[in-house]
Image (cartoon, rainbow, N blue to C red; front, side):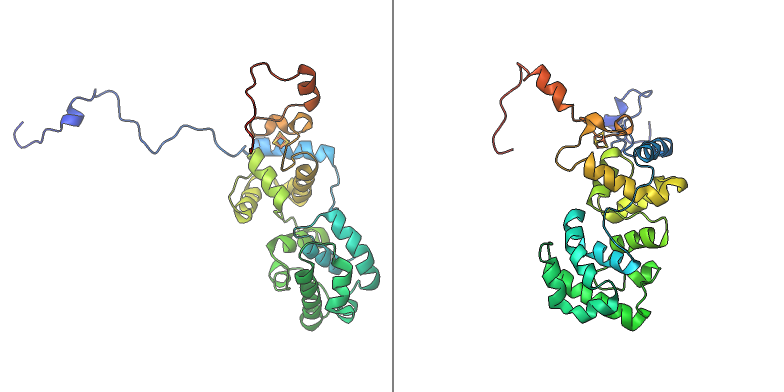
Length: 262
Ligand code: SF4
């Protein structure tokens, strides 16, 4: 053909078989979808109809302090420390009067206690000076308080003011990713995903259900899939088998020896 370039590569390709696009990969969607998300929350809600935080508090102020202290600490550990702390200082004024050293004395058993003692005093001072000693009920104002980030603000909004926020801590992050409910690489991505996939009627309890499920069933080291109420909806593989069944069956004869250092 006059004027036309001959392309050797394409001229030998059969015309009825288009080249596969290298960008398209056939893999299952990572999210579980709205219908399954609804079923998942229904199952979690059946297990725990009225989920609450396991942190002890008596007022929005003691809640803010307890949540701020709970970073990189267990709720049980925080409750032990705050039982004595709140007995002597359950208002911003009393906390400031107690002073940084006084607060530190009560929370030495909690990780990062020095920083946290400083923040508790600073946030109490700001509450007195800027908010008349009252814990504010908006995210922007809460996040102005020293030591209060997005996660703490979300917990306080939800627990103290009944706002249907979903705070993403380590448990919520893990469960959301493993199940496919809201996969994400950062807490912000997971929170945005949960906002999209959580049906309205479950938004208020979502944070608690996911935390408690992560704490007691979908544990970090070994998820206990064999007694998990949402195993049939979860995308995580392979599921952990029931250790009782595994020990009855005994070790597999074809099992290769475990490598050390894994
Ligand atoms: S099936 Fe396993 S991985 Fe999935 S949520 Fe339940 S415990 Fe977690």
